[in-house]
Amino acid sequence: MIEKIVEEMKDEMVKTMVEMIQIKAISPELGGTGEKERADYLEKVLKAIGFDELKRLDVVDESYYVRSNIIAKIKGTEGKKTLWLAAHIDTVPEGDISLWKTDPFKPVVEGDKIYGRGNSR
Image 1 (cartoon, rainbow, N blue to C red):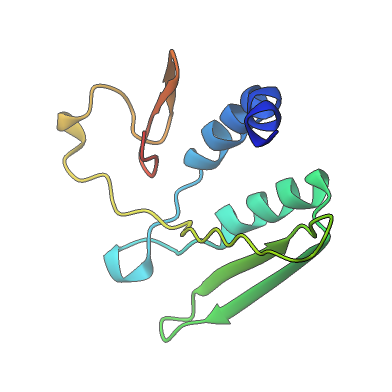
Image 2: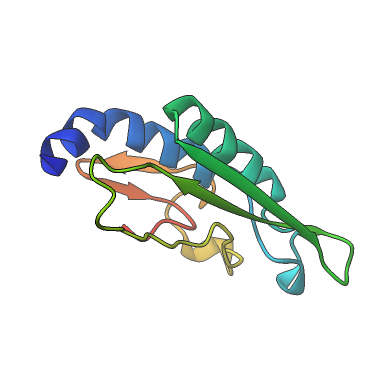
């Protein structure tokens, strides 16, 4: 059942990932402004999907940047089991830009792969 849902949502998931990669979310410790803008985007996407519960936790760090976290829940049909998925939404800097074949914040989709910074494959 889950495989069918994933296949049906594949195009939308790719579109979301491509749009999200374009939003730089580099931590302030590494010269960025944090993940607030990316969290804003992701929160909008999750609301559109219609999660049962959505909680946003924003914390201002010692550099006065907003560091964002999102907790989203979908209630199951029986409520007997829980599946937890945890992920981070910040990225590390792109490093030496000359080593990239394409702009790391303008993702490229080739077949079943997305190439861009902050994407694991």
